[in-house]
Picture (cartoon, rainbow, N blue to C red):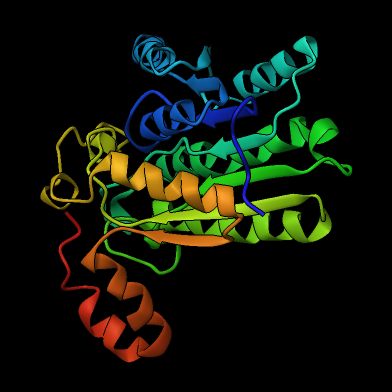
Length: 264
């Protein structure tokens, strides 16, 4: 049975740009009541304005997913207001552009805190309204890099791999929860610009592969449709998705090709 998002309370993290912002606009076009969370308050305000222009109610909530205190404060807001979330989109994340042995351990931790521990803490802080009989949809933005290792992405791949194990387990324990894993390949977003180098500094470049990726609004339409249908795993992207099938059905070929594919 498909979800009608009209009037439903939807939280989207990482909503200030990229896939999160595009999904916010798509939910807005479907009449959802939006709670948009991200670190960059200025960009977030612009996304809220765009959603309101589409006729939706939208509120900006600042959060740093790498900070336990910030995540706890975000979760507490819904308790204070008595807002029950129908859909929670865990989209915030940070990427990486560095060789494994050239990445400082604290950078590995930063990536894991943002991409894995932040979403985990948020859903645990929201456990009071997630657990029970009321249907709740959780959408988790992972990556095809969460399905296999890839050069220059060791911490990023690890964080995305971990999301599958945690949220599949959560769904199996809670029959009222449906988890949709959104698994994008190369999407035209600025995520590479904010990716971290081995020393933690910003990569600050737009990768050619990213620039030539799927249009972000098309990605958002596919993603929101998948959530509506309750699809458990949805691959989104172009020709790069073939690597998923090569890894599954012909692993020897994957290891021959993966190191030769441009990581940019």
